[in-house]
Length: 151
View (cartoon, rainbow, N blue to C red):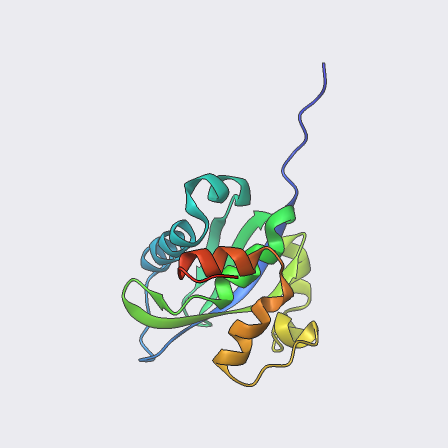
């Protein structure tokens, strides 16, 4: 009998910014991210992504998410496309990713630059960011179908 392999995980540290500088609770943020993920991926694909909200630091406004390693790029794209959470205008900025939680805390000093800057993706406006689609070939058709556009 073949032993089932464990899920290969990737942890993502992200900063959550609301337009009105208000704070939100952990449960409200968790519900908002899960609802947006469900709209973006759909139930079937979300089960493969295995997105999990691990923790939220209210003071620093940092959230820790876990996902399947194979869908790490798609989750980064999804996080960058979030415009609102629970009806409030918000942005989620991915700061750092690692295979372990310890790896995220070890580089906390260097987490000031976002993953987009470390990957050398240069964009100056939201329009440019949407045009790049974070160089993920799988995100382009998903976003196009969501917006009812042709690829």
